[in-house]
Image (cartoon, rainbow, N blue to C red; front, side, top):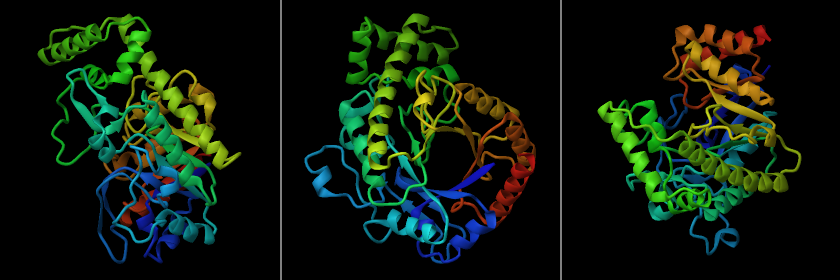
Length: 379
């Protein structure tokens, strides 16, 4: 039973004890952020700092002018860590200590770029842009993602590759002082997450739908949910909308995987995914062809309720190995973790990915060792 732990470059750099804590938890490898979205991250066990304010999505490798010149979409280097290759430095520390490293690459989650180029961002049926979400219906976005992945993998040892946000993000997004929690029903969230940008509208038209009619139907459905008067989107229209989204996701994944396999031939690829085909976010919904394109799926399993295991088990019907993404941070209930891990093991997951070795305080690391022992005992 394989167990890996996630970390950021700043967790490793400047903390001589980080490698010891990795050994304490006894994971099989570390999944290390190489291209990551904005975050305010705790570092409770770091000897120098307690909080890192990563203000924008960044590439933790050198941003080479020879590669990115002339492109509207180009990553930025972080100014909250020293050096131009903090990923390379952190990966080197781990590798030198015998710890396999998996680059963690976040693709379409980039608020700075969405703000700068709203024409490439996800837009809802009310014309409101989600700047954190680049829409994969645009060739420019797909080219950016593929190039980003290739630049991450250049000249570093790679154990496997972890792809997050390899698809479309939607209305739900934790952000600064977010005030949207609980405002919409699950159905309203679905319709507010349908992208209505120019690229997606063109896709609808190619499938015989009138974009203005679609937008009107989506608005009526959202307003109907709020007023508790059902105005569902017609099922045939809904299926076409999903097909257009999945087509863009498939193209994004294909172009990114081509770049990954050219840069790191033969290296396994793990895809963050959700078995709900309508899911948006860091773990987008699986398309009919997604699972066969990769070597494993990573499925979110943070809530410790039994329904989470059902979600993970549903993903296993895809026919590829599935890892469960677990945490000791909220929303996990620490008292329920042993039962949760037991259910995941019984469901037949390949392994666990622990979120997150740098964010967890001391009691969190103890919980991770308990998770490790429970999982290995069950295997």
